[in-house]
Length: 332
Image 1 (cartoon, helix red, strand yellow):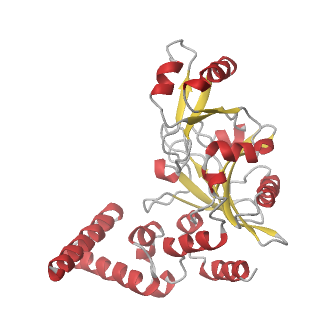
Image 2 (image 1 turned 180 degrees about the vertical axis):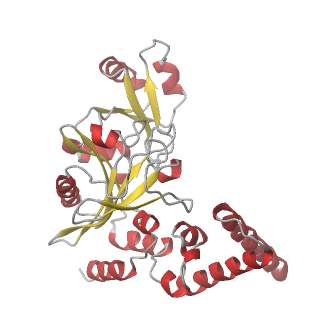
């Protein structure tokens, strides 16, 4: 039975590996397929690079030595657990608790709808904001987000509440600044600014601009969006990628050039992210999502598990900088 289980696991391993290879590549021959299998397995055995990590970061185009520079998901996950307070990080995960904690930085109306007892408040909100965003309380990566328009009179509040029994957050629409909106008008295109709170100082690390694509109302990479790595010192985009091995110099829909794009009011965004980090010192490594309005930057949400999409955008690992940061945090 042990041998049978081992053979079964080995077969599943090969199936998962091949699925990943064919998701990102089209091997030209059996020899090419075996070469990719070998490189992925070596990267996993030696450096802990997962299948998706390997292809999303375009490691297939690099030498095995260069692959060692990448920080795999498993190491990122380990750091989150080490430096972010497990008893308090739920404040970031829960959309409404996050709003209450960081209310001054939202600059828009947000309510919690948790059943029929919230019906009257929801009706009042709809009267003030006929179009709004609905977010599930605890889902991430843009999953479950809806744009609701009640202006045609067909929206039924009672039915909507009953069809979402777990509750949800309702947010006034963010009126995005024209410069960022022009990149992809259908979505709010947000900054992901990672902050590292050392206690005596806060630093900005590995920022990216996330941009929607197609008819998506969200900019998340998991929903088909793209993301551009930003130079911390200047706020200029240096590289752009998606999650599927593609790189870009311009937006695929609007054709606006992205390489060299200057993020407006960049230093203000960095200062806001640092202020948010100081306001939530319980988590030392957080990814803040910020949107730009004509009045300035506003908070969209905070993430206590910030994926390092910067590595995917650039196709370059950040091993040394990440290791230095981790040592400094763990010595606190």
